[in-house]
Structures are given as C-alpha cells and as structure tokens.
Amino acid sequence: MRDVSQSSVSSACPAAPPRSRVRIGRLDIDILNLDEAVDAIGELVARRRGGLVFTPNVDHVVLVDDNPALREAYTEADLSLVDGVPVMWAARALGSPLPEKVSGSDLVRPLVARAAERGWGIYFLGGRQGVASKAKEVLEREFPTVRIVGVSSPDIDLSKDAAESSDAIEAVRAAKPDLLFLALGAPKQEIWGLRIREAVAPAVIVGVGASLDFVAGEVKRAPRWVSQIGFEWLYRLAREPRRLWRRYLLRDPKFLAIVVRQAISRRS
Image 1 (cartoon, rainbow, N blue to C red):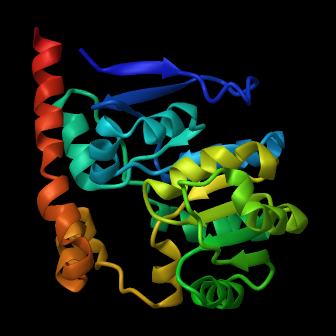
Image 2 (image 1 turned 90 degrees about the vertical axis):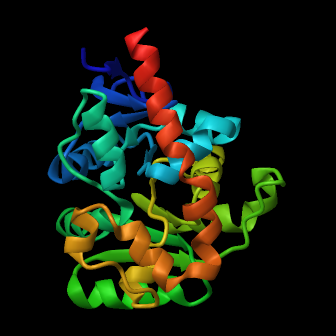
C-alpha cells in the first residue's frame, strides 16, 4: 500500500490545488520531477500570495524528528521537494517512489531561466560575505535578461524574534522580489523562512542551502554521476571533513532507524 497523502499547501494560500505527497519519517515530500517543480513554483509566483519551498534531504528527515520548529516549517511548506538519492531509496523501499531528485542546487538555474523569461525579480539572501554577489555576477552573465534585484548576507539569529532582523527584512521588501533564495542552511533557512513569510510576501521563499557557494565557485559540487549514485554526501565529507563529519557520521545514520521504524509501523 502506497504511503501517499493528498495534502494541500499552507493555509495562507487556500486557492492552491492539493498535491500527492509521500511521508518519510515525520516529513511530507511532493511527488514532482524538476520540470513540474519549476512549474509549481511558477504557480506560486503567479498567485502573488507568497510561499515556502523547501528541499528535504536525509539530514532534514533526521532533524525534523526532534526539532518542533523545523517540523512546523515543513508543515507550512507549499512545496517540499526531495533532495538526495538516499531519500528516494527510502521512498521506494516504503512503496512510494519519487520521480526525480530536486535539490536547491538543481532548482537555481532553471528558476533563474524562468525568471529571465517571465521578468521576475530575484533576491539572494545568505552565504558568506561576498558569495551572493559573486553568484549574482555569474548568473547575470549566463542569463543577461535576469533581474537579480538584491543580495545580502545578514547575521540571522534564530534565538531572537524575526523583528530583530528587521533591516534584512526591509531590504527584501524594498527590492520587491518575486523569488527570495534563502541560503542559510538547515534548519535555519526553513525556520526563519516561515517566520518572515508574511513580511516578505508576495515573494516566494526557496531554501537553496549551499547553492550560492556552488554557483559562485566557492565550493565545488560533486560530479553529476556521484550525485546520481547517492554518494554526494561522501564527496562533500571528503572535501569539508572538519565542518561536516558530525552531520554525516554521527547524526545522519539515524535516518536508517527512522525508515526502519516507519516500515515496521506500517506492517503492524
């Protein structure tokens, strides 16, 4: 029996049609391929009510299990798109296959191309100082007609109220983007994205993680074939062991236990 539910998008956007979703652990994922995801984000932009787009990977599934704030953010997400072949393996093992990996990094250039075609404005927020500006330069060379209306790399502190980040929010509001790419990393970008959603609407917030680093050339992304066989995590660990070893070697192995627990629960 397929573990698929019909789940409508956030209550802030009641006009959106329901979409089929797959549950992995305590997190729901939309059954969409890359082209369908770009179209769905285009629908959110056209509705002019804002929105939240997240790309859950193994780490997100693990974090959601113990983080109520992240769980709430995912509950409110308009789109939840699978980032990671291991999550796709889990979905298939549970009898609910997903069509294609759709990470934040996979989305950036197709969305920039769509924005250039439709005249949408894009704002980049996050990353280390200077990274967003470099990414902007790269993408403006590739897509000469795109409107990247602003970049910033504020220090976001989740222990403080969103009002404490009023300067960052006002900069986005003043730029009036259609798409806001949040490059803060999980779980910060998801939790903060939910907090500011209404303040920056009608911008559609897309969590893109390390994507701006990849675009700017600050961090090398794994070759496509490595990603396709499910070992992008190992490639990143080998390149940044001091930063990522706790995540990949201590935290993320809990993912297997979560999937096994779900499989046993479904059989009982």
